[in-house]
Figure 1 (tube, helix red, strand yellow):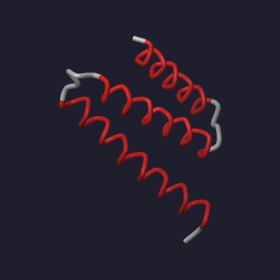
Figure 2 (figure 1 turned 90 degrees about the horizontal axis):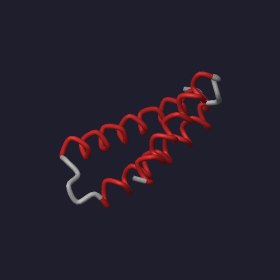
Figure 3 (figure 1 turned 180 degrees about the horizontal axis):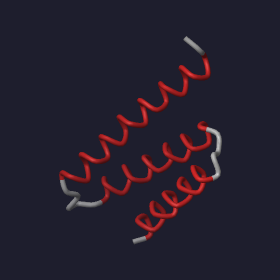
Length: 77
């Protein structure tokens, strides 16, 4: 239950940062930490459903796409 609570708190923190228009790097750092925590939680859950694992994989792909987009904006074409 502790890991689930930490994940929910991290999601709330990310929402707060987005509402405050925090820099992309700060939000991405929180998203990276969220994915790390979620992966850890899924590995520990013996009954993790395929949907959870699939959602985690989609989140990792979305993060990678967001990082690439942020890098392109920062570094230029």
